[in-house]
Image 1 (tube, rainbow, N blue to C red):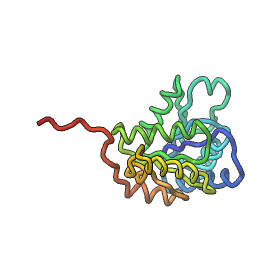
Image 2 (image 1 turned 45 degrees about the horizontal axis):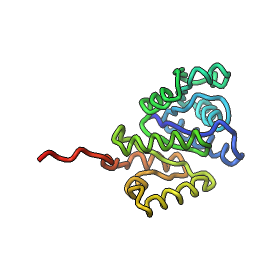
Image 3 (image 1 turned 90 degrees about the horizontal axis):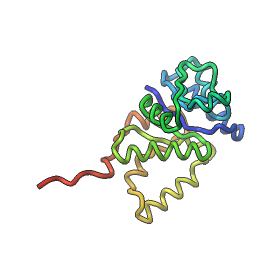
Length: 190
């Protein structure tokens, strides 16, 4: 099993770094591979370093322009260089069995929402989760609940978004995951 990890290229607070390292180490010790953006910096580097130190498989997918900027992690199990950010996300999705967002910024949100939306549209049936470190995702969850309350988001979609605090919680959620029906279906011909 491999989990795509979306997280920031900035370090964030020490408590987030510690949680990310512990999470990655726990996944590695459970025999779960990590697929991530291939960077050596910030929370991304923390996740990769911790998983590698624990003997885990870490697959990085990084666009050439970031390799050119010397941001690629030099010690990964497998580093795949692609041309565009779109190719990066598609490759990460293909290589992964589930998606989890750790604390991060705009890029983390963009990756999270794309993976979650692809599931809604029936492009995959893989679980999408949030690792809620220090209640980082609570404001986002408040907004998502507002979207449900105002009729923009089906509550079943929000219920399918996992919110966990540990690697064990993620593995438990993934093992019991039931993907909701596709958002859009062609009406039956009659």
